[in-house]
Image 1 (cartoon, rainbow, N blue to C red):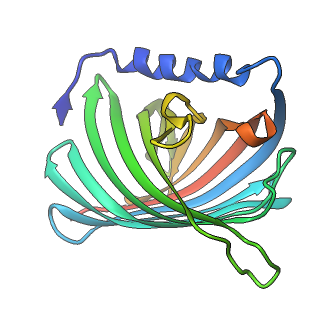
Image 2 (spheres, helix red, strand yellow):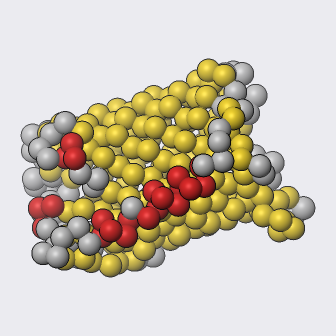
Length: 251
């Protein structure tokens, strides 16, 4: 594992604090508070000592399951360069519906290529991961009930996530430790319009991971998702229940 100074906790707290001032981006912007729920499956399956297949699929809804928000499918391949250092790349398909109090004008379809670098280290009893992800995105509006798409536009985006996790003292299920975690992620478009200087989304979350067996756990958590909607001069704050099945198979 890579060794890093203990500033990671301060970094996590500082990134989370970004959400508060950004919600009030402008007095002339409205702010919409709404409930959502994300249900996901995350698979990290080693095929050799250094190479693993990755997949995550997410079914995102408004309310508990009330109305559609997004469907995301994201396969990829990961390579361990050295302990604590992994690189990965893959593809993603995203279908986004008009949802909530600040809906899009039409549904969106997106094809995405992504690359990432993940650095992991320990801070005492806590495991910390820093993930840097780059995305090339092609998006088009659905223009008819038959699913016809308009022209695709291109965007590029950078993302940074820090996650800290560790076993909760004396909390066990089926004689296995329960995991506690906190995380924050910022998303920044790059290279078009005024997006080069604007943070457009912040995700701050935490929760617990309940073990199923040595390789599987179910993570239950809360995420505060702030999203900027410039076309409507609105800020969206989604108070989100997260439910994830995590399956990790190591060689």
